[in-house]
Image 1 (cartoon, rainbow, N blue to C red):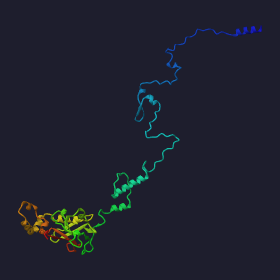
Image 2 (cartoon, rainbow, N blue to C red; image 1 turned 90 degrees about the vertical axis):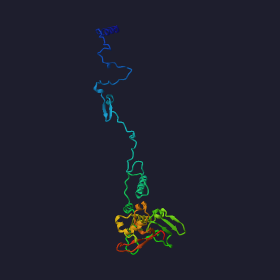
Image 3 (tube, rainbow, N blue to C red; image 1 turned 30 degrees about the vertical axis):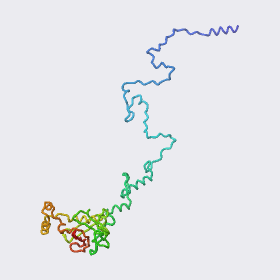
Image 4 (cartoon, helix red, strand yellow; image 1 turned 60 degrees about the vertical axis):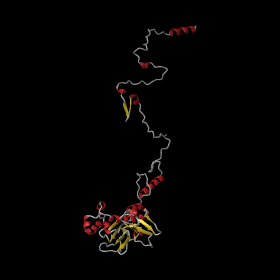
Length: 329
């Protein structure tokens, strides 16, 4: 009894809502809905792209020398790294600090190059290195400040004009069987290359280049004055800064006495010039040859050697005297 009444009371309490005509839902193709309302279930959500206008497609400049469009410039563009730059992790130690020496050049190689350049200054070797600047040593400074002439060459001032300032080479002295290694035959009317040495054992040979380049005196001289008694108007002056050689004496004698007489000299030696021209054959070659200083010696063009002459009024410091003879003597 009680159970039935309970069910009747519960059914009476259930209220039914009034039915209203259902409102139709709009179609998904309707223009009222934006395309963004349709979300495909098979694709992930995507960030809507901003609306683009005409000016947004114009290229922009991210960095100097680099140009990109709007889509690429929207996100910050990483700057390219140089190819030579090495990417290191924070835990990796950096490179050591650079010292005063260049990379890849050890201290020993720098010292070796410096020695080559120092040798180049001293005149012993050459080095292609030009950029290194070295401080010259005191020894090199003292050597460079000296004269270019060798130590044996000196311009000696003779304190005693009665004695020669130096000893001449035996080729320049008059022949002496005790000291001479041969008899020199030098005709200064000819070329210096034709100087002949007649050796004591017999036979003659021309002087070699080494023999001609021997020092004329010991100690070496840089200046010499040679006087010839037969030609007093034309003294022979020999000078060489690095030291006079035997060949320098031969050439100076030949060049001094091989000069053609000037008009003034011809007038001064008029009598002797006429005698010389009279003895010459009447040929065009003889007339064009002219009269030279050595022609006044009457054929005495053979070199016999040099002797020291003491001082006089003309040569207060003394001079060397040239002795000559004829080839037939």
